[in-house]
Length: 106
Image (cartoon, rainbow, N blue to C red; front, side, top):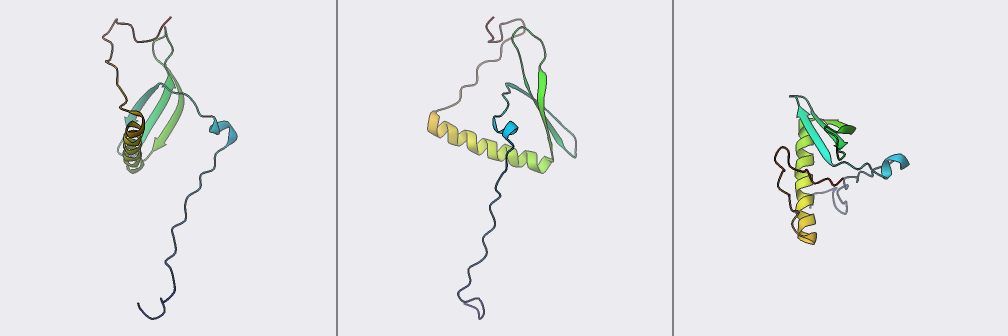
């Protein structure tokens, strides 16, 4: 070991502790998302589709850099894999053809 470093441990990187406001902590339900992008940013629009209506209302918009979008993709992929290991594969239903019922019951 080099002189002067004896007995020293390297500093640990500090953990980032998130803070969450009470009105945000309950979350917002979304069942539809739309993503658009430019060379500088990704825009994630989250919304809710309602039975019997066309279109959807955007309830939250997240704007981020391409780097953060890719990091989000990798983190989400890892978490979906861990979820499926614990609870089983998430089944993706077949998309309905135009004019077919969309899964909403009236």
